[in-house]
Amino acid sequence: MFTLWSLIEASLLCLNAVCILHEERFLAKIGWGASSQVQGFGEPPTMKSQALNLIRSIRTVAKIPLILLNIVAIIFKLLLG
Image (cartoon, rainbow, N blue to C red; front, side, top):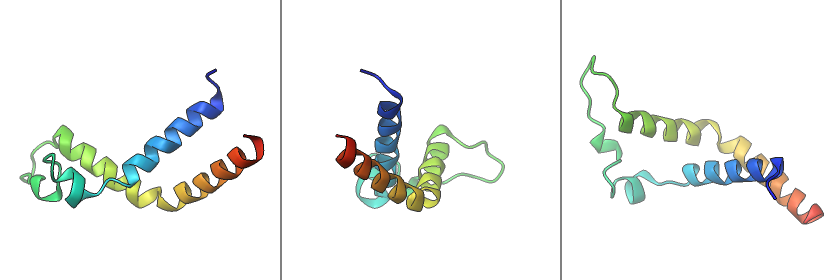
């Protein structure tokens, strides 16, 4: 059954997955490392560079809130099943 909690839990799991991506170990192997993002001044950003910026932004901004949300989700699962 699809509920609001299922949607929240799925988005929490996706954010966790984005935050644990390691640039040197995983992203560089598929060509998405920091060294592959060479772009000239005034050039429009590519889709890959925008995705990398989004990953870095999520990792920077959402680290502490994700820890708190994970704790709340674990407690909720333990109490209510």
